[in-house]
Length: 110
Ligand SMILES: NC(=O)c1ccc[n+]([C@@H]2O[C@H](COP(=O)([O-])OP(=O)(O)OC[C@H]3O[C@@H](n4cnc5c(N)ncnc54)[C@H](O)[C@@H]3O)[C@@H](O)[C@H]2O)c1
Image (cartoon, rainbow, N blue to C red):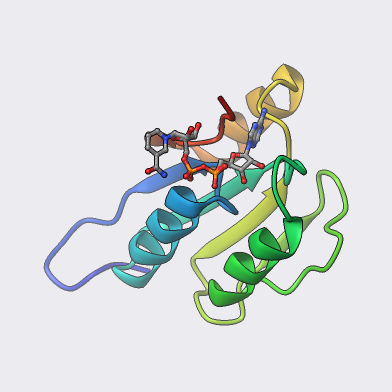
């Protein structure tokens, strides 16, 4: 999917169920970029908030399974995978499969 007059980018958003990452993923998908969102969905705060944000992006996955890919019902160009970025092998595989050109990293808890 390509935004009008713009070249779409392949972007990986970490922390895609978080406050900032979910918004980023939504707006990028809306403008036509090819978005893969990942999040470990940790329980630093109520995970219902995180699943709610994913639903706003069209990702309906209560208790998402690890490493399962969920497609957005709203944006055909948005996919979500529950993944920890500490899992190097999975992150490497993600890069190889998706030819990602941009990473927006909000997936950390301090
Ligand atoms: N929101 C702000 O105003 C603000 C201001 C300054 C700094 N920050 C920092 O920026 C970061 C993002 O902010 P936020 O408000 O979106 O936080 P958030 O906690 O809502 O989102 C972070 C997301 O990252 C995920 N995550 C954590 N570790 C991960 C891992 N190893 N692999 C994959 N996902 C992981 C969490 O599950 C969470 O959903 C946070 O570290 C925050 O401390 C936020």
